[in-house]
Amino acid sequence: MTLDTAAQPYHRLFRTLSGYRWWRPLVALLLAVVYYIVLSIAVAVPVLVLAVLTGELSFADPAQAQADINELALIDAASPVSLLLALGSLAVMLPAVHLAMLSTGLRPAGVRHSVAFRIRWRWLWLSSLPALAMVVAGIGIPMLIGAALGEDVIGEFTTDPVLFAGCAVIILLLTPFQAAAEEYVFRGFLAQILGSWVRFAPVAILVPTALFAAGHYYDAAGVASVAIFGFAAALVVWRTGGLEAGITYHAFNNIAAFLFLATGMYGTTVNEPETASDAGEAALVIVSTLLGSAIWAVWVVWLAKRKGVTRLGGRIPSEQPPVPSAAAHDSAIPPAPSQASS
Image (cartoon, rainbow, N blue to C red):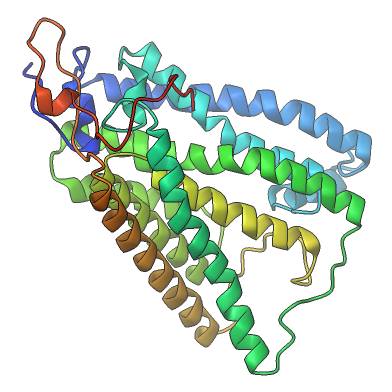
C-alpha cells in the first residue's frame, strides 16, 4: 500500500501514518462504539444510583420508573443528576476514540488533534476570542433588540441559588469535555476515517455533519441550526488544520446555553426539543444561526491565515527521509510543553 508522504489536509492525515491500512479505520470505528458503550455504562450506573438516592428515580412502580428515565433523558440544567448523566455520557467519547485508535495501530493518536499531531495551544487560545465574541453577541444582540421593542428580555431567576451554584460548577467542569468530545468524533474521527478512503473533502465534511445533526433531539429548526453549526465547524477544521477553533466555539456556546437555562429565566430549566413555536420563529432561529456561524467561520479562517496557522501536515514512515513541509510547524504556534490527552 502506498502512503501519502506529502503534506496533507486534516481529513487525510490517517493516510500519512506508517501503520495505516484501509481496514484499520473501520475496525477503529467499531471498537470506538464498543468502548463508548462500556464507558457510558460506567458513568450511568453511579449516576442512576445517585438519582435513586435523591428521589429523582424510583423503581417502586414500573410506569413511574419509565417516566423518570424519560425525564432524565432530557437535560435539566437545574438538576445535578441530569447534568452528570448527560454531559458525562458524552464526554466519555473522548477516551473511547483514543482507545480505539491505539487498539488498531492508528498511531500516533495525536493525529486526531491537528496537522501538527498535537493541540496547538496558542492557536486554541487565539481562536477562543472570536468564539467568545460571537457567543456574547448571540446573547446580547437579541436582548438589546427586545429591550428596544419594549419587551421583557430578562426573566425571573427561579432556581434556588445554592442549587444553581452546584449546577454551574458541573456545567463549567464538564461542558468543555462534552463539547470537545463531539468535535473529536464528528469533526475529527469520522472525518479522518472518511478522508482516509476518499480524497474529496466535501465527503468528510457533509457526512459527519449530517450524522451530527441527526444525533440531536430537536425540532426541524433546531436540527437545521445544529447542522449549520456543524458544517461551519467542519469547514473551519479543513481550513485551519485542526479541531481547536471548533472546540472553543462549541464549548463557549454550550456553557452559556446551559448556564442561562439553569437560571429558570426561560420559564423552564429543561433543554426542550422544541426550539420554535411557529414558522416565523423557526426562520429566525435558522437565519440567526446561519449568520452567526458564517461570521465566526470567516473570522476564524481569516485569523488563522493572518497568524500563519498551518493547515497541511502529516507524518511519514520512519524509514523515509523527512519532508520539510510535513514536519514543519507554524512559526507563530510554538511547540506545546506536553501532549494533550483529550
